[in-house]
Length: 516
Image 1 (tube, rainbow, N blue to C red):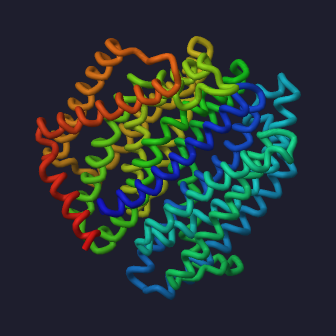
Image 2: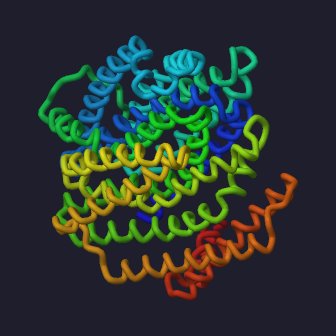
């Protein structure tokens, strides 16, 4: 499981780095203002549905069923089930896409009510949303194919395909902008084109795995009905994070122009550790838990859950410490160029700190949710999700005026902690979460190491403040991250969390095997 975790995490990290380049281009060309706000809302809409119908509810219901069919009934039955599921998904999503294209002006009035105060932002957002909305169909189908590949334990291929989104997006911004009204249109067309590329790559990967997935005409077989029954309640349960971000966007459109953009770029940095660790843990843990539970191996399922918690917190907690201390320099170095001013970067850093507070909770939701999904329970997270949504909305209303662009991120972070607490409590009551004493002790030592690292970084920053020139700033930030990483590794060694000698020996063995 650790190998698969690192494989998915590695490809996801590469995708996030390319995504960072894409976001830097968006910031440099559009800055933080009306044009950026309109594009971000246009992208948020299909991306929200992707999380809900693709990576969220559908995947949470589909992967355990697919893995169970594959284990118990063999390849042919699993392939037939996947083809029928793909047919159902495509018909439903095409219908939804047509409705969205027709009623896009009305949809934007709901998710971006603040744009109505400015006809320019509203009209542009409608046009851009109609360009990006077909991405919904393409990427949800791609998510199903990726779920099949994950069920076949071909994690690397499925994760690598998502690089296409950022590669195509970067190419569209750089190459298509001169032929379109502005950069926002080029970026919007890049979103839809990337969906075509990702879906094509995953179809090709399935064919190479001798698991062709030509969609079948929808038929409500008993297994498809079971899939739909599990999926419908999961639309809320597994999509709480995305719905919360959408609420943040709605509130953001009611704030001063540029607020949506400030929160977006902050969230993109927050998504680096969240996307890499959360996606890797959730993707690799769900089929592992499903397989252990299907085989009646309860102790192995508990052990896998505990290992996932240890892995993600080992890397998440130092990320939180680093983001809280270095948020300002990070945003200045990465985005403070072109139309995105240094002042904009510092304002966005405030949003980043608010998001970073909730980073452990955001990641833990990804780790705890599979414990429900692997047991075929997609209903329980619904009830939790409804409460979290209401809490997030209430906190947004409470924070929006006094905290402005920091309000929605802080509301999401606090709501995420409540989400984790309730998930953990219910799993504990069901005897589905048994944290071993060594797991709890390890988490405490990791937290102490991250806290000491943060204090060290504050001290170094006080003695050596951020330089004035870009190149020196880049070197300064690189050194700070390196110092923090080395010191954190040393703390983990001192606290007995890991033995650096064993880690280095393992790396040497891997290098020697590759050379051989």
